[in-house]
Image (tube, rainbow over all chains, first blue to last red; front, side, top):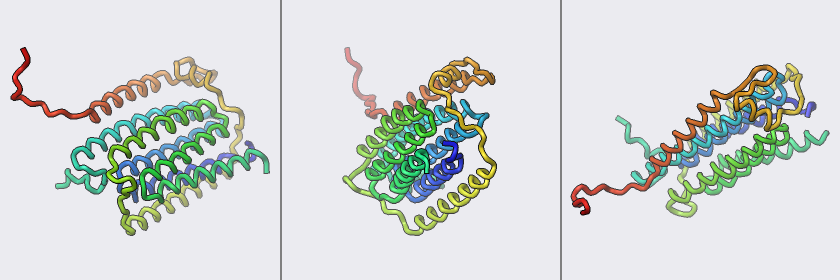
Length: 104
Length: 181
């Protein structure tokens, strides 16, 4: 593990993050956007756990923060899906471009 | 090449391929399957890093919970079996450029940071010390996470109540109906 180091994990996390950003920029389906957010959160989590392994001062903090991110991501997914269901009930679509009711 | 390097390469390839599949597939159902591969890849990464508890939590919460929730969302909201919404090509260009720029910047930064060698490479604390830290028992450096743990718990409770309230089946209340009895 020592010959691997922190950088490969960070680069993989950067790739996941960039994929997540591309996902919620290009997808029009609201649930697709949610998948992009999950990818971004996973990228942050991978960074935290890799830092916990390779940075001496973060031995337990990295893991603790990662657990919290997992819990918050689950909460976020639940409430976002509830909002999308409501939106679907009102508009009969999950097209994110159709959600412009607040436009003046 | 040592075994960790080989394992890392394989799992990283699977994870990155899954993430790419999520972005490129037009059908949401297929994107969910690609997301499954990416999430399992990240869980295996946690196992590789020695964080067994986190790997298990990732598998249980993400793969077993969040992804199933999403598939249910797709099931409820999709009109046709593979009805995907088309993305305009201008949006592909903007999104691709943004993602490529972000990836280039982040990769450059992490390679620069890697020039400073990371010193610590011990096994991570297992679930026992982690749980003790969450329960407020300070470790040898005095870190404990009782307050964040409580905040996250209350947050999860409130959010789940709110989600159940938002997603409930709506029945129109008819004021004209006379009360029973």
